[in-house]
Length: 335
Ligand SMILES: Cc1cc2nc3c(=O)[nH]c(=O)nc-3n(C[C@H](O)[C@H](O)[C@H](O)COP(=O)(O)O)c2cc1C
Image (tube, rainbow, N blue to C red; front, side, top):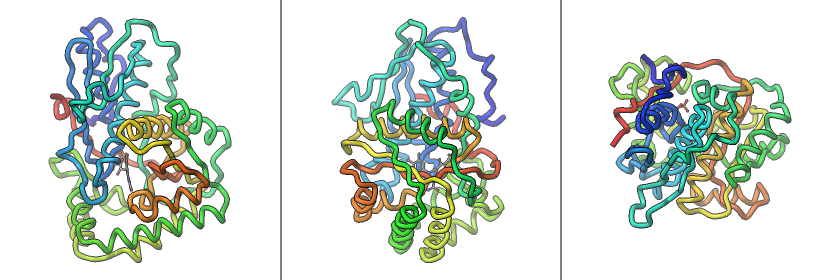
């Protein structure tokens, strides 16, 4: 059975706090993560759930300071809290509770009170959200969708900048293409990416298949070999340039600081925004190259007219329905 098929009615209403928190982890693991590494671990002690960074799943080349790794964990935390609200648990998260344990990113505890509000549409979107790397339709993203994604992000203290005008999209597309050329020219970047490309039929429950890139799943081993062996930067740059320019909306999340707490907030903001986009029947994908390449990041900030730190770059639109990406089970991620 797929990790994406969860029957809400299985929530253990009369179960122990431990059983209830464990059920919520089923939603947390559906969060997106860089290269689908799923770099999170959970520990439950009574009514206390701890979220830990699993740095054995780091991507040292593309993400040398674990920034995207922590953002991914922030996204898992957002799913967990949205699900907790839905099941009537007023769960509160304390971020970075112990300076002596840097991998402990958050502690979630139920306050016992009824939650102030719950948004069923956001909750239902947890299992509907996909990363869609295909081209999107050109129809504009409704203003209401842009506004509600922005509001979700703002609720976590993170700004979401929308880029809608063709000229500005073109300038962002140029930065993305430059990032592709620089990244693909680096054999260690390609080797790291290739090591996370596996077939959906492989026994592993992580990584990305050729299917995720719009090719038959069977081609996953060939795809990994091509990525590892050839500098495909020119072709990738042209493809991503066209995807960025052709997407009706590009969004960039920025934070005031650039430390672990900012990255957790960015992950929560991103995921809440992505859920609101999925709830509206739209989809999204990432083009983070100008944030991952250190020389391009300040140029992206200048283009946005901000002194804040860009954390994630998404494109949004209407795309085809896709099969979900593989996930590890709750047992796999529990300490
Ligand atoms: C922090 C972060 C960075 C990501 N960066 C990229 C990226 O640069 N390019 C890309 O195609 N996907 C990127 N992704 C998407 C992941 O590859 C995707 O979430 C994962 O393969 C699982 O698929 P799903 O989102 O459909 O569940 C990123 C996701 C996160 C959370």
